[in-house]
Length: 136
Image (cartoon, rainbow, N blue to C red; front, top):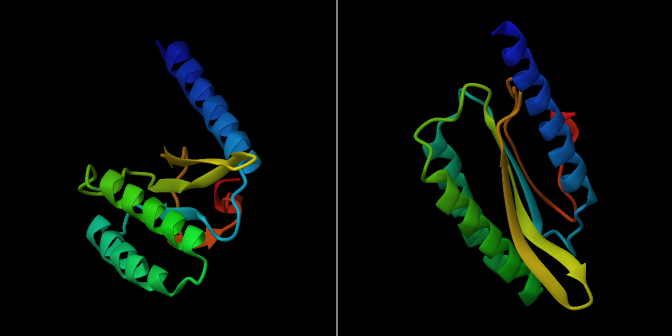
């Protein structure tokens, strides 16, 4: 029984590392990729209210494409956070944004990770790639 739990934990860590590698390879144009870290002691309500404020601030982005993509990502994150009353015991990391697929093609992708160790910081960042340092 203990060996099965050990295997399960090892598999979870392996999948976690693979997910981080996939996220690291993703690129966006401009500041369209959002990294959001929520520690276990942060209220989801506070996070959603900050995201709504950020949604309003997005109107100041000059590039229409970037503005639209950031607003889409924030809307996607807000819709996914509705399913959480409180963060999981280790916190939660959300990575969302419009990924460049090549040429003129792009796709909105959203990944939610429950880290194996507790998060001890709150972070909201828009960038051209995902902020993965706190998870490494």
